[in-house]
Length: 428
Image 1 (tube, one colour):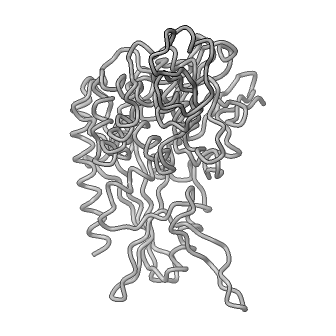
Image 2 (cartoon, rainbow, N blue to C red):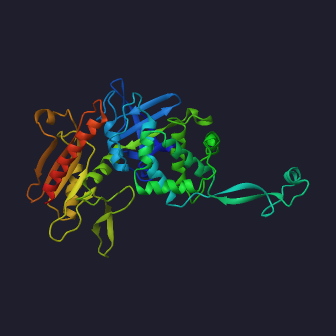
């Protein structure tokens, strides 16, 4: 068996960023794909990841089961737009050649916000001056060339901490490039925070010059190594991929693996968080926020941290309800899921003294269930024997990716309304 892992591919961008830091439940040991030989056939297994991987001029597109064959990645576009807060309904996603450039702009606002949370990047810059306010070593050769006969000025150089440097210039060039296409413009105006971040970069890059782009790219081929500004490194990688279009193919990197990968299970969970945030809190195991504990020891210490995907806020008037997001074929009995999924949800229900648990999962439009039933939502109710507990399985029907993304978005909106109505019934 051959495996490709994230650790061996530094030129791969991954989303979410925490994928590198915390092991995903659905991507064991950060595995990208594995090759198995079975009955003399080579089988490539990718798990829940989606995206693009390339080496040199060779590209591999990893699609979800909702975009088989030559179908467009409309579901990926739609979820990214929802999660990143970008209005993608009216965007042009009809390009015959779908590649990295179609998806990289979605990530820019989040990467920029995360980097700027550490402050604007500062770096020592060598500056050369010729005036009467001497603030550094005199440059004798340049002084003789410029100031003979002497007219009151002195040529000198300084080493200054500057916010207008190769990194901030790279970000500025990326912003200006994104303004030239629909997805980029939508990403840059997606939220007040994004607009404020862009304004800050513009304020600190007065030396911006469109003609310096290649020079700025070359100055950023070495990754950021500052121990404080660590969040600028992934932003730097993203900017380079955007400005150099879909490939990293400069110098020694030309034969290295590059690309962009999304954790489909994580993206599905975050998409549901946007759709269902009216009812649920959303603990996040990948960032370590909002967790709880399963046990308390005899010396009153908490033990065994847990992160339910979704849980209703505490309310003394009603029991809490736990929901679990699964990027699996839960509509099919005994396929791609087992008792562990049920055991986990029942454990959470017992921990919170809940009588209701919910599985939330996506289903293809052509699934057998939808062929037999003229409905837009899969529903199944399971009663836990010997108790008052029950589990609801709710499957969101993912429309077919047709010719127009607008039609797909409209159908997704209708499916979301059905899901919201059903959730409202279960919680009331």
